[in-house]
Image 1 (tube, helix red, strand yellow):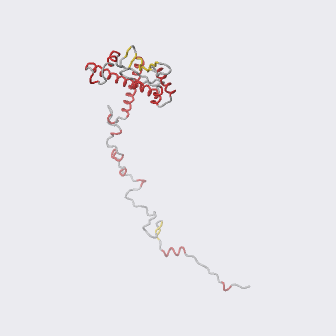
Image 2 (spheres, rainbow, N blue to C red):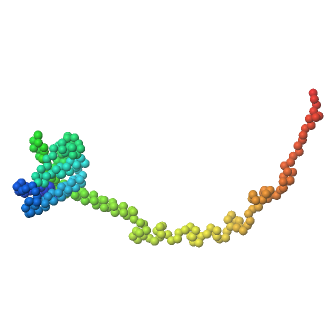
Image 3 (cartoon, helix red, strand yellow):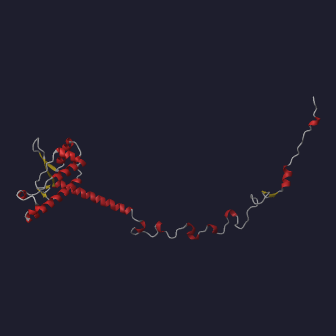
Length: 254
């Protein structure tokens, strides 16, 4: 986009070429080569300018540039005719394209005008409005500066995130004794430590060679309990008792 009188306009076919175009045949192959080359070059600039307008408008943080307003602006840019310079869709056409009511389309056009993107020319109560797409250089510069500042913030954020995701073992000046690089760290190998060889001291004052206590309950020795051996006959003597059976034959009968 190139500013003209501190305003960026979408370039259209110049008026002198427009007048000459009226005298040329409809078939472009029959046009003079010089005129055709200029026409193609200007039309390419026209296409690039439309794309640049849409891209910059998309970055406009003006609260009036809602998604619907941006869609209406994109449609007006698309309606601009390169050969004639006309851009005069009806309010109903704009409403149908954006998907809103006519009153909402009128409100969107007013927002675009207030935001400085279009110039509206009224041509009567029964005629459609004529629109010119243009925005001030100051607004374009402000939008670009804001976009650049946001881009720098994103770069800083990505750099910080990349640093957090880095490998600690590969960081600059990373010490060799980092926990991830401890040399042969294993509790059983710390200073030749072996729990079974602790200064030849038996656990709880009992030598490792000492036999188990005989008083412990041994399921493998039948009839042994607390170190006392007994037979089944001894058990019967210890547990037997005298049973007295009463004599009912001597019972006195009343």
